[in-house]
Structure formats: C-alpha cells, structure tokens
Image 1 (cartoon, rainbow, N blue to C red):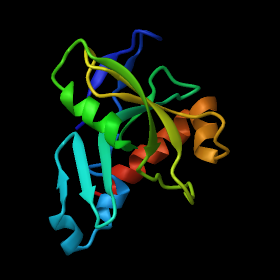
Image 2 (image 1 turned 180 degrees about the vertical axis):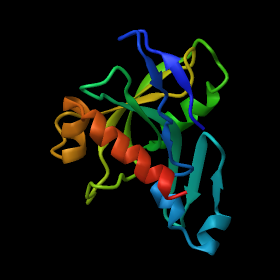
Image 3 (image 1 turned 30 degrees about the vertical axis):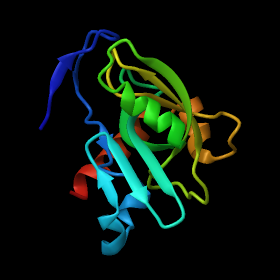
Image 4 (image 1 turned 45 degrees about the vertical axis):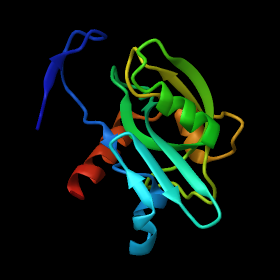
Length: 168
C-alpha cells in the first residue's frame, strides 16, 4: 500500500516508506518444536527458556539515517536484555512516565551483512513515545554499525525495502 505525504523537509510530495519489521528475534526463528514449548512470544516481548539459561528480548525501533533523502529508514527489531533489565521494563511497561537506558544486544540480522556476533546497543526507553529506540555502539567494528553512524544512500534504502517487499 502506497502512502503519500507532503514532506516538511523539502515541501515535495513523497511516498512513505514502510518500516522493515521482524516478527521475532533471530534466535526464536531457529528454535525446534520442543524449544518453542518453553518459549513465549508476544508483539513486544519474548522469553526463551533453555535448560541452563533464560533469554529475554524486547521489541525496539532502529532508525537508519538516509543521507540524501528527507526521510529515514525504520526497522522494527529485537534486542536481548539482562534478566534485571527485562523485569524492570516489564514492570513499567504501562507506566507512561517510565524512562530508562539499558545495555542490549541486537538480535536480528540484516541481509548484506555478515554477523558472527550480536551487535552491542544502548536501548533507550521513553514510554511517552512508544517502543524503545536502539543505538548500536560506535566502538563495535562492524559494517552495519559503520552504516548506522554514517548513513546510507536513498538508493540503498530503497533496495532494502524492495528486497523485503518482494520476499513476502
């Protein structure tokens, strides 16, 4: 579905880009049927229980700057949190005045990047604006982190959108 709007930045009519959203953490997508029985997934929270540990995830937003365009590319992604951070987040989920910053690991992997390890992030919660936003640590030496901090081209953003839309 194509949505048009008048851009506040350039004053021209633009087409709105869809957010590129992941329905679960990558780890969840690879669980066996038996492992799924010990896991819980909602639209905003995920818990995976293994015999030796429990993993906690929340849904967040990552905004990729697009250098030569007025709009940015948004991702709906999942990040892992510690047990303590996850519990605090859940306890304050409906508290509109709650704000916090957590350490988390990016738990979705994007095409065109190789991920040997998760990317460390800051997870910024401000319940007055909705889902938390994540910011990859600039100290992490990874092409995705470099692109996040330096921006990508409009052509690259549209290529990513078209790849996702054409695979559905």
